Amino acid sequence: MADLVETAIAAGNFNTLIKAVKAVDLIESLKSPGSLTLFAPTDEAFANLPEGTLDSLLQDIPKLKKIVAYHVASGDVRSDDLAQINEAETLEGSILAIESVNGKIQVNGANVIKTDILTDNGVIHIIDAVLMPAMVAGK
Image (cartoon, helix red, strand yellow):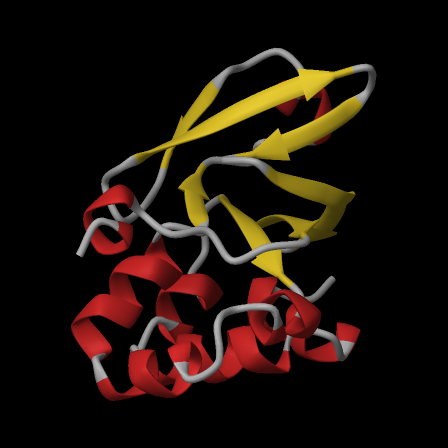
């Protein structure tokens, strides 16, 4: 099996996420042994951000790093776990709200469109929106 980064690159629809991870120097963290859960926004999710947002974030590495780290939770949190919990702490330090209704899972209002892509060092859940920590969104 491949690690989180290799799996995301191989999937082909996380190019913007990988670009952001590289920009904030989190590649090694996402390749490290252990267990992480990555809520991975697709390239389409990044494209849905207001025009200029991504370019502006790529110029503000501290803010971008908070956003990228907000998509990563400690531990191997699979879909069965997501259905039973209502929050998860992120590497950024904030809490994600997890909601499960009629078999559909949402993370901070973003729909989880595919779950349980297993990797050597954790699991990826594909989401349809970029998550913004409150301290970044509020600025």
